[in-house]
Length: 113
Length: 111
Image (cartoon, rainbow over the protein chains, first blue to last red):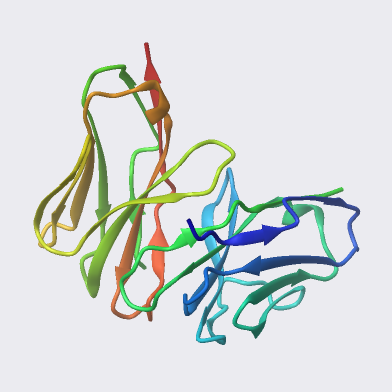
């Protein structure tokens, strides 16, 4: 079965460091989502791309977070500088546009010390 | 806003039936998804409802009432492996293809 692939699976780093998370969406999917999940906030949408174009990044702190899709096979989420409150699980999901289910990657478990 | 409400936690017994409710704002509603998320894992798609009524898929069924802004996920013949979080997600026609997720209902199945 086709899967969304995220790297790294785990990341521990000190505050102030740059963090880059990568996602390979399922081939053929034209929408990509980045979510953050914590116990307190649930699943929050950070950014959303369709056909590689950013459609919505209103949920993302602009001063430190950035999301890009340099090509159809790669989406990136960067945090610079990182802070302890960024500790969470970050999920990437992909799908087809329209009312279609999203397919989630296994997530990146990020800990900022 | 587009608040989506689900109970935080539920407990049920192995072999029993459990119903997990979800309410949402009806303005601009397109469709409703249910996802299952086991602890430490990614959410996986369970069902999608766009029309009123019950959609059955094995032990799991999902119901929708568009006019009432209400859905439920029905799990029959509960198994221990059904212990997970169940996420209700709604797509609105103002949201350009994205879904708004509820906070999830953590279901614990006991022997």
